[in-house]
Length: 50
Image 1 (spheres, rainbow, N blue to C red):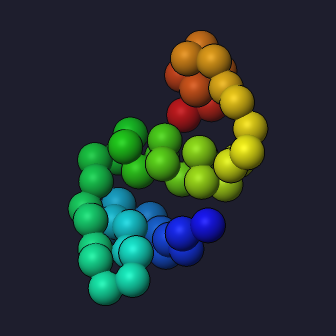
Image 2: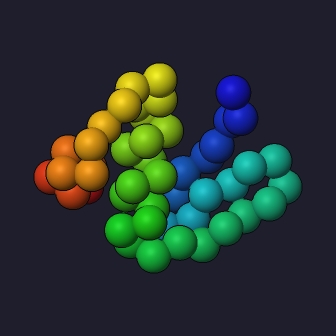
């Protein structure tokens, strides 16, 4: 599993030496999926939780 570091203040994600700045919703969705890996969600569930 790839290890990601999340920076909630700047909505950025760091993977190794790469840093990607995301929009707030993108950040929330990625973090939710990362924290809940190995689970399947419907579109409606994602919209409700993010």
